[in-house]
Amino acid sequence: MGSSKTISSSDIKRVGLLGLGKMGAPMAGHLHARGFEVLGYDPVKAACDDAAARGARILPSPRAVAEASDLVIVVVGFDNEVERVVFGPQGVAEGARPGLVVAIGSTIAPRTAISLAQRLSGLGVITLDAPLTRGEQAAVSGKLLILGAGEEAAFEACRPAFASFASDIFHLGAAGAGQVGKMVNNLILWACIAANDEGLRLGEQLGVDAEKMRAALHHSSAQNWAMDWRAEDSGMPWAEKDMTIVLAEADQARLALPLCGTIKEVIKGLKIRMGLGMPLQPD
Image (cartoon, rainbow, N blue to C red; front, side, top):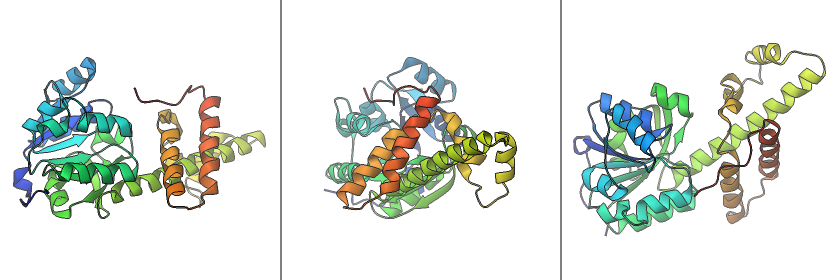
């Protein structure tokens, strides 16, 4: 059964974070600064210590975080990691109660987000898409972008908590729509990075300094966020994962996206050339 209770912002006082790494730890600090009680869990002790120093109370499991929270925000890397913290042993589902809100801040496949929402609904839990955009520096500065979805009243009830670490917050539709938004965002982001790399290398080969070219292009019709913020300097840890999600969803929808397939290979080549090694893989 789904939750019959209408959630309001006054109901969201205790916020749990599952994943206290480069994104989760700064988010914990922003939430604490806004007066929320922050509960957290991460399997890495150093991450827990960092979040604790920012005001989070560390608990021993995702289950314990769910039991103590009004809103749980999941900030882990891969679909199977989300599955594990939600439905695995000592996971969120074991500590869930009707009216709990679970927001998936991770970037996962839209169909995974829909499945999670359907399964948690049977426990009376409200699941929201809340994938985070703009990266680590935006998490530190509290200027993340949330592409949200799910039950709109519950999303609005969580908006004050989201606003502690996000400067721009959008609700795009039913469960899965937020992950679709993040997927499209990432496709365009990696396309820009690939085009920037090839264009700047072409200019250099023809004798134009790349930094002078970059400064000039900032004022041209080629200007884009990835170039302005040097997005490639992030190490692009999620690029291949993101493009794999896009291609899988396109296959499911029977939609040909030839540029997308090319971008995946171009980004892989760029990472190899930059010495960034193998793509990240889930445990």
